[in-house]
Each structure stands twice: as C-alpha cells, then as structure tokens.
Image (cartoon, rainbow, N blue to C red; front, side, top):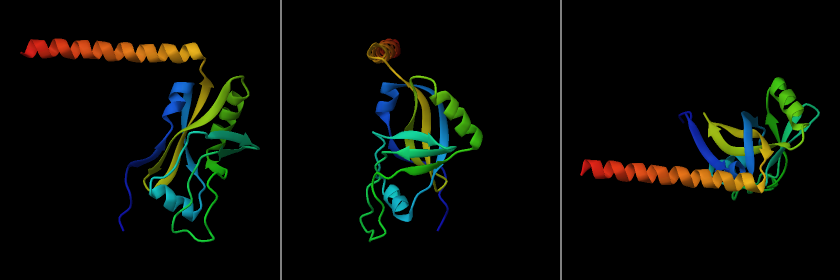
Length: 159
C-alpha cells in the first residue's frame, strides 16, 4: 500500500474564528488508539466544544468528539476522552506563559492527516466581545460588496 502524501482535512472549527481573535497557531500530533484512527479515517469528528488544557508540562485536548468505530469491538474508545498532544517543550512553555494572561485560551482549529499522521492545529486565542464580532461581520460584508462592484465594472468593460 502506498504511503499517503499531503494534507487531508477531517474536521474544522469554523465558529472559533468568529468567536476568538487568533493570536498564534501551532501544529501538534495526537496520541490515539487504533479505533480512533479508523474512525477519523472515515472523516468523522467534531471540534465544536474542544479546548486544550496544560498540566505539568503536558498538553491535553478535551471535549473533541471522535465517534466510536462502527466495526469496533470491546476495544472501542470512549467518544469524548481527553487526548494527549505532542508538542515541543519550548512550545508548551510559551503557551503556558501566554495562557496565564487574562482572556487567553487554547482552542483547536482543524483536525487533519498530514502524510498519514493525525495532526491538530491549535491556536492561542483571545475571546472577542460582541461588538468585535459585529465589526468583523461588517468588514466581511464590505469586502464582498467591493468585490462584486469591481467584478461588475470588469464585466461591463469586456462587453
């Protein structure tokens, strides 16, 4: 069997970019059991309620839902168990100092396979206020309107 190449996206947390201001992102490996890997290969996972907690120089991923493998037996995993993240010590230390500041948290953004290995993209984030969310939506709408106007002008010039 040929080795996998590239990046295959399994799950993405789109709401996180709306609710949080992303300050820095990291790529981390995951410690998984066999049935978890098989379930992820079927493309089934949810990052909606997930968060990362640091304990004693280790990073743990909590509340990420990986459903049980359908052909699994008594060796099946629990769906919402905590999973260890594989990060370098310097990255963990940097994250630990940043999360001690008020309002900072670590959240998962994406879960994917990279060259056959399960990875999670985590982000150091700061929660947005309600007015910040409205402002980003307004900016997004303004960008769309300007793109539509520019494309309409280009269409008229071609004709």
